[in-house]
Length: 219
Ligand code: SF4
Ligand code: SF4
Image (cartoon, rainbow, N blue to C red):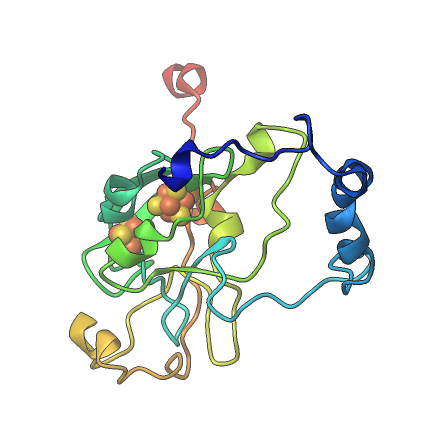
């Protein structure tokens, strides 16, 4: 006779020992008892915050060159790479009198919608200028969907020593390529911020068109 044809000896069948009848219901608590003596993994957040891993995928940052000009060239590659359609970019042309990046174009509008973003990092892989990177900041929760749309002003990196806020002129004697070669290490002496009329600011009073009172002219 083969082994498989032998009757199974389970606790519910006639013939099960009285010892087995007692042990089986208690055995179910074995996992619970073992867990009681293990090291606790509960984290006391937000009172105690753990340090994240160095390459943690947190909130994004738009980086600057060492003189303060922006690295973003408004190419939209990050937006095309995003699987969640969370990025919106509009590019615009730089002008000598109002320059935001060393090259031809810059990002005039840049938004990331954190209600959609899954922090996968594909956008930063797609960026050709390393303008877009991710920080270790993870506290992004908000009760308003509108607040979860981060604008360029919120995402742009702060100013470090040696930087002048954009827009301002390109470093004298340097080209766009020199910026990416790391030859520009700080703003040139005398670099001043240009007037940013395209960001909704008013042009200086001297450049305002002079209103003509036609009634007075006719009189
Ligand atoms: S991290 Fe991923 S989901 Fe978030 S904006 Fe970048 S590509 Fe889109
Ligand atoms: S962040 Fe990078 S990929 Fe996105 S628009 Fe700017 S330069 Fe292009």
